[in-house]
Length: 217
Image (tube, rainbow, N blue to C red):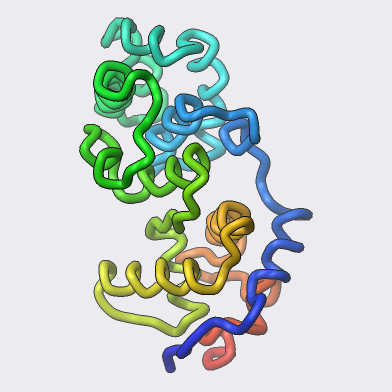
């Protein structure tokens, strides 16, 4: 069964859970700028946040500004990303930062199309930057968010179709001023509770509104 719409204020229990159980990372702090956020998001692609945390502060200590990173030696960068197991991200991050400096004067454009024209920035990172840097409420939805919300909504199908349904459901049901917190809470819920296998439904703050939980027990 697919839910027609999310219940009003469905996210309230989620936010209460997030306030108590949510993870705390430096790139989520209100003081984090576009550079700190972009570094984290590229590091986080298909990598656990706890793994990224081990090198994140060290990386920013060595390259504290976008300009420093843009001038960085490629081999030095690769040595950092080798510790994440994905060396190719070194050039991707440097290229993205250099393009933002040279093409946009050192600040990401507040346009989804222009952001996605920057090498290394796709839908998800563009949405994160729009929401957290530009103040433009935009759901940032990756495979983890899709997993959680597709279960809540009872939606199945092609990933691209389900992703579109999830984005629309979040955008239409969450007040703009809460969107970043709700979206981040869903990410943590995916990591800690709503796992791909053996989700801990009994501990989930969304268990009373989740279609999959209702129909599978």
